[in-house]
Length: 575
Image (cartoon, rainbow, N blue to C red; front, side, top):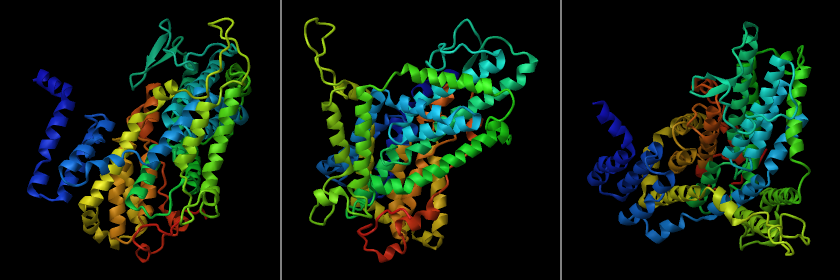
């Protein structure tokens, strides 16, 4: 019997892929309509995304096969959905992020900010959260966490060693910082998640309190990194993929929206939310892991000066090892700043941007998009040399000159670019197109009209809870892809502005804090050791549904009085 269960478990992915389409067949057979056919496709893809029986990107290709076969959308129209302007923005933003990572500029920024903030416990945690959140606004949450967790543990190990031994060898190699495995000569302590932490010997009874304190601070630093990575990603349109899913869905479902969701408008809405959530997370982590002794947390206790100097020395040493800024780092920094400025001023909405003035269309809107700007800067990075042009000898061929490499090369891009996300985005847009063409969106909206009697804030809050719970078990991209078209249909049916529920639910999908499998940053810090699932669950959901101020920011009063080609005159504006 045990062997049978083992075989079923081993072949579970094959069984799921084979059985799910068969088990769902009664829906299109008993209800032979386009709405049922589209619902069959959506339910099948949602279940495959949740179980991950197939790679997410492979599941996203199902509409190319199923929609034409079911007579919902032509194959040529479905294919167009897989390479839209939002996908181009995704590629352009990631190209710039890859350049930042390739030349180690993100590490220099992180260490420099930590030197400014200092190493007092409360300020150290705040410093790590600020740096992680800022970097996560521009590069992937996973890359940010993978870089910041070793730095956090290196600083923490120096604090712990000076407390136990009274001295620190400055500039010594730190296995935590270098992401090495614990030395086999050392004893290890098994943690509840199966990870091991190296120790030199069993601590005397007098050190028990210090060991517990070290573990609490270690847990706090780990959690602050992964949580701030998720929180920071919501601040910019390119910070995390669900934001781009929202933009693509809005542009797909409501073509005449006047480019309401762009880089500047999203930033004006999401950045204040990010700051509030970051401060709440910082305060809660302090209370939960460091207690209410704020005098000690801010470094005013006894015997803390030597420990702080030791930890500060680690950061100084690592910053010094980077050396002076290279030509490549300076060039990437300048291009990055130019990109952000162009994004903000292209078509801000509350004044004429350079896109409206220099490249207007017949309606006076910018013909250029945020994706155009990102690709333009990316192309420059493929052209600009990484060293100041000069007569450089080729070390492999003496007597011959060698040109320096460009800031970006295709080999590096091809290794680091998550191409699968482009297919995942396209699959979501294809589902939205199929829902619209089949009439499923209208049918869902009509069925949800009884919700019109429920207060709008209550609707937004309940939907955020549902999305936040769902995203703990599946990809945040898949979550937003599944829910956003449904939310848009529901909102229109009950005369509620679709962005009123789509915006907060998009943010909620990005804030998966409770489980290690919920998001890659959580998995990274959990695999580092020192954490239990219970520690992560104790934080619960730190997001605050921003629906309370969405009305004021969007001017979403009485949607039914607005012309139904949604958002024709609505602009996202910060109040």
